[in-house]
Length: 190
Image (tube, rainbow, N blue to C red):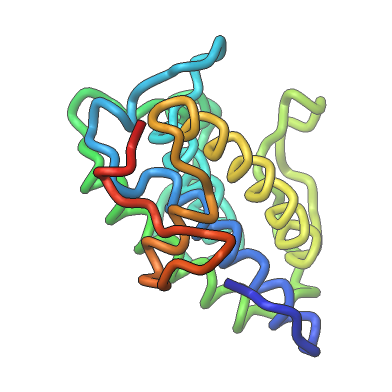
């Protein structure tokens, strides 16, 4: 949890990113594979799909900044990044997410935010890729993007079992109950 502080730009960005990444992760806390795949809303989004998509975004940024030794991500990867495949498990998805999150946050901590990288494709905006951007632009965009997806994951999770973001985060972080939040417990599920 990033509480009010007086920090420099890099620390502020890194901590806000970590908070949003934790919120996405927390949405899957305590869910089994079937629940992770559940799509209780009108769309085809699932908690697993959001976790996998955010991991895909982190991998794209790591690739673009030269921090990850993978081949560039293509559009087919993008569309597949919203669904937990039949051969994937929640445990493997979580492990990949946590590994990428650690590398991504190190990138934000240590890479020159003014470094110019090639932005990943965004054909839905008419950008097929190859656009130069400052890493700072991508990092700030990710604050927005990851917050949006954390909200999506919150709504889906509430539909699955009524768990709320604050209760899940308190459970994950091992915080005690207070007058505002009681940490989520499996027995408290609806």
